[in-house]
Image (cartoon, rainbow, N blue to C red; front, side, top):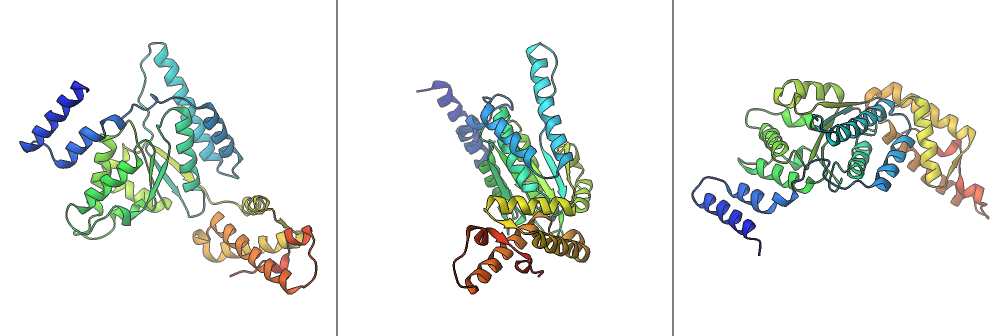
Amino acid sequence: MNLDFMNSQSYYVNSFKEGKISTNEVFDKIFLSGKRRKLQNNAVDEVILSNSIAELNSLIGLNNVKTLVDELLAYSDIQRKRRENGLNTEPMALHMVFKGNPGTGKTTIARLLGRIFKGKGLLETGHLVEIERADLVGEYIGHTAQKARDQIKKALGGILFIDEAYSLARGGEKDFGKEAIDALVKGMEDHKDNLILILAGYKDEMDSFIKTNPGLKSRFPIHMIFDDYSLEDLLEIAELMLEKRQYKISLSGRAKLSQILASKRARDGIHSGNARLVRNLIESSIRKQAVRLKTNKGDHTIEDLMMLTREDFIEY
């Protein structure tokens, strides 16, 4: 039996009985103490790291995001070398703000970063916990703080990703969004060595959110901008999606898809959907192709089964 552990248990339990600490603090001290590890104290996994970086570099567009990830990894390497040579080092502050429209790759990058940081030894597990306002904000006093603590505990060792984070600041005085923000900040401080928090949303809304919450600015030093994809990027993404599904697109089909994407962007602007729109159009065209082939009775060649034509793409 570990006597040090037993003594520490008794100390925290007695402190609770004397009213010095809360139930949640007892739980944190006794049951979560083993989950707190210094960033960079985990083993490096070169296979996970190289595979994840290769996947990142294979993504279409996102050049400024890739550059920033390269900077973070280089910074980690040099800080390690400085430490090995007895020089002063700076702590790795990896909490981030992702700013961009829907469908620009924010969740994809967050998931990849988890794997990259695990491979680099910066995170223990690198898993991603993706949540939104409803997963944090409660219905009565104290409920919100507990929900926030629960989500933080799920994310320990990995990344807590909050989509549309700016919505936490919306609502009147009786809204519990502010309580959620306070609970998240406390969680960041309590678990700074074993948790990365990413706040994501539209650029303008996220800029306003950070400005109206001064305590957040210094705690989230890394801001990644996710630009809208160009029309050519979207067509490349479409072809990549089709290739993974073992489909092809005819020249006339590609021209029709390009026309639809341009029309949607002109009409809907920032709400056009980016890669999400492409995925929806691809899935719709595959269904249209299935109906077309079933209607045309007879034997179908492999080429028939794979090819999407102009008539399979319909704007909705």
